[in-house]
Image (cartoon, rainbow, N blue to C red; front, side, top):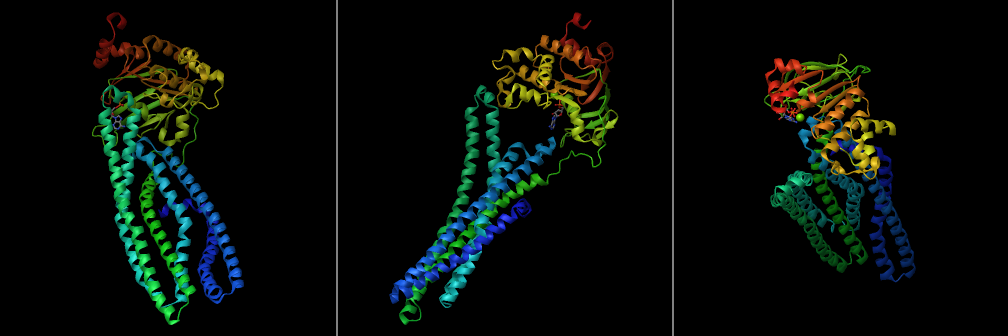
Length: 575
Ligand code: ADP
Ligand code: MG
């Protein structure tokens, strides 16, 4: 929690002004009971109407100032706490943007979402409450006790007995509550995860008749949260009544002894009433303070989770003194690269060496799980290699900034991702300032022109979240257009033609060949027909390269390649 306080710093002056107002407010509030007591003792008992009017007017004035200052301080505390939450959220978001894929694997997407939303809201609420009460509660409690002692020191001894009881109650509740609060946040993560899976997998769930199973899964997670929240609420529920009970007993005792004093003539009625008012005030604010402590302990669970995100060092970082280069040619070179995923037993890639040159098509073929996507993902540095190196134009990609590196790459992932927006927005994602002409040209090469012009609104047609309103093949073609519009030096196509029919696939590849004569093309595919006419074909099998060469050479030298070819093509196609 303490670490997050730095996000409040910018609003220090607002807080100080508010605290000043609160201080005046507290003093006025502390005066009111005394004034009331005086009205009773001097005005009512002695029948001095003038005094009643004068002092009453004074009380009204003080009360209006109290209200005015209260409004200002509530407004300030809301403003500051909202701004604090906004800053914190954007800080977390910024941090997450810097994460490499392994950090996402570590924390998990659902948890990242809860941490950015729910956890920050928890802290924001505490900040708001603290600003409102933290300054006021101790001042009023202490001030009231002082005033009470001033009114009648012996009667005040009662407060001395009651205070420890309340403080002990607060400590017990906080101790019991904290572990439960932590648990609540993890349960929210879990619920979030199930909900996400359900919403994204809704088609599969329906198709496999798993609706009931999923309902049960959700029910369990939902009940988990409910149970634990009830448990916490039960503990919390004890605090308020307990304090009220203690308070009421205190008042009984005060009235009891007070009346004896009045009987003896050592105390006046007005004084007693003021005294009771002070006791109530001090106890009430003490109770409020205890609530704040409970809220802080809850928020500290959230703060830990947020700090975990903020403190996480991305594994992939820009070098301290990056080399400033212009990637002119886009020669991609793998030198004896070995890579394993965190926690995996076997490396996903072993001793990979090859060079992909501009103006040439380098194709990678291999069965599922052979490491094709892994190889492609290493080039934009989504993961770092374990040993060996990847060079672009002769420079190790770890020596330049990720921005420089990625600017030179047009990446089409295996799983096409589109964003909410129009068709044109999605293509311009590759190059923000692309002209309409450039966008159109990219779609022509990507063979996307026809289906876009068939859409009612053409380029302004809306794409739904996740691109669910276009087909798999259309999605692929749009993400290809997005990469093309950048005109990068290096193109990476990860199985990007898999959802296209053979004819469109061939047309697209021909158009590509004519268009990108100066860039390096790395194309992953499972289809022989897609890779056959590549300048160089790399055969990947269980993370190792079995052969490199063109179609003809590999047919002669590489058994695995021959097997793949024979399983897909007929005799005459091969010849
Ligand atoms: P391909 O694209 O050739 O089908 P991949 O490169 O996706 O194969 O996967 C190669 C191997 O790496 C597989 O055994 C797969 O299980 C493993 N793998 C892929 N992604 C991850 C990941 N994020 N974490 C751990 N292992 C992974
Ligand atoms: Mg793959």
